[in-house]
Image 1 (cartoon, rainbow, N blue to C red):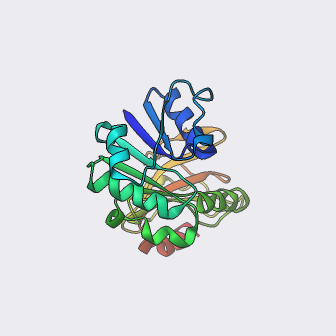
Image 2 (image 1 turned 60 degrees about the vertical axis):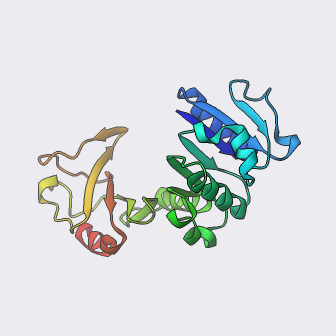
Length: 217
């Protein structure tokens, strides 16, 4: 895929490096000359331009990109870039970086954002997941709030020990998608029993998270 990244700072460059390693074509766009450092990622295309201007995006060839990632450190800029990419250039997939969690509500399809990524919220969720045992932790929001990836680590004294997946009574709009056990990723087949210290990963709508929490306790 051809992917454009608005913002060639440390975050944008890190994303570019990962994508290039996975075989994608990447273009980095930034209006600050000090951020244009082709020697750091030679495989990327570097463009000195303002990603908030339609003519600059057109000259850069955004219309040929499959994905636009708005990854600057300014939420206002990211929203403008996302909106232009979607409405002016019909980019198929637009990802928006959220710097301030208070602005998350803006990063929706109305602003051209298909997927929003809140760095502070992800870090907080990972910390919470690392220290929480027995409680439901929201790791990631999927498709603009329609569903969440949530996790629970079963405590040593869990009443679910030995219970088969088929006997786990889950609410509607919740699905067990993986069991992490001792370095293994287990596909939750009906006969698979649960064990203490298992990490259970679910996809669930926000509305049923409380019901899911009760089912697991």
